[in-house]
Length: 402
Ligand code: CIZ
Image (cartoon, rainbow, N blue to C red; front, side):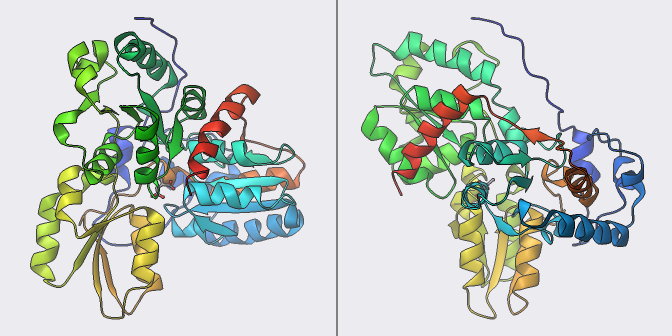
């Protein structure tokens, strides 16, 4: 098996995961210097940005925006903290936001308050004159980092060796993956999926071939395949640290789903015990979780769906209804604020934000805006032309299924 040099990533440490966890329900942003004092390794900024108060940040962000006018669009992912999302021209999931950016060609600069793979997707979908900026360059995604392209290419080669004369395998990647993985899927007859359309994309994939390599979230892959009636016995997990992912050639040939061993650190915090506790407290509660949660949690919940689904269902629910939600805390808090006539709470009593989404502090947003206002583009995210072309193929296959 080939050994390749890996791209360095800024890892999400256990310290960072725990650093921002709280038991009270709000997480007000502190001056950046204070947030950095818990030993996180975020992008360096000019000193003055570390000390601005919330009021100073707010005033300066408004000033910079006024100067930049329509040349800038700010996009905010549902998982962004309140102090950042309030500046967003559009809020949404990663794919909706990228489409929104592409539909606004007057915006030369797209400031994407989200994480790296989302900015890459925007870059793939945007017009060539648009530049995509990620306010904090270290805002990656721990799930996407669990599938480095070098490991995926090695796995792909190994799978071809075992399966090419046994019906092959179709690569499907969740949106939460680097552009190079999307491109690999495009080149090899596969597609991208989101958590909203994973079922449709998997159905399509099984019309193309007899088995699927699902990247990088094993839980979304497993939960979706189970919904389609594929039994657990026909699923194997690919551990990139073991030869053949820890499987025998026979196990791979028997499998319908090969699930990459990746997960979301936020959604795997939710447990069946938390669901039981929520039901004990509110017997009429509806438990609604994201399909990145484990199979046990998804099966114990009343409903599961993407961030857009969760928002829609709760926003449209009758007054007085009660919701225990298993997804990122910033989204849950926002739903609770926007629906004061309903009882909405996070399943997990310990409030832990997504630590990479949290790396976008308003001071970073201010910094990139002030740099733009001074005529300098910082933190531009680019995708090489060949990667963009092939990734677009995989995205187009998904879009054709809508
Ligand atoms: O694609 C997204 O934005 C994510 C991360 C999840 C979802 O369900 O929308």
